[in-house]
Image 1 (tube, rainbow, N blue to C red):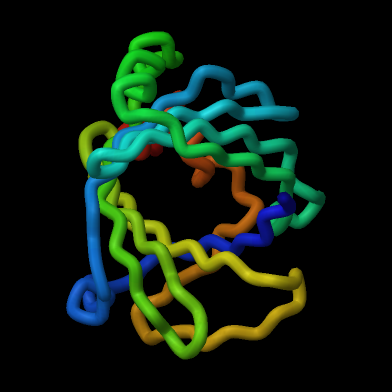
Image 2: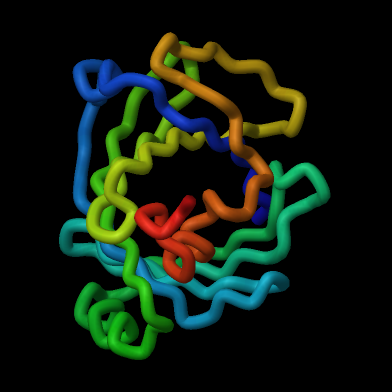
Length: 156
């Protein structure tokens, strides 16, 4: 239940032509404490409840527990979330043997595009496509829980 993930900015929309699928995501946070975040997510007709722990010093790995819940329950829980619901379109892009999840944010975070890759080990190597930009792994302002509180449109 340890998630190993790296995050990158995206420097072109070429990933859209390479995507195998895309879908809309709405998510809110029941708790954004630095030691634990509790997220509610709705994707298509699915609901998810996720608990994440604090990241390691480099921001690459952390505890993650996720459970699918009925979409109706997820929608009800969204009403209890802290202010700042995240809206985004996620694109899944196969690069080599890994999938990148590229999130194109909407609403208060419009203009921000982040690619994430989950790995089996911290030092695992992976192919980097041309559209992959600067790495922002461990930069807290790019965490969705922070984007819900301090949206991209308010950055100076």
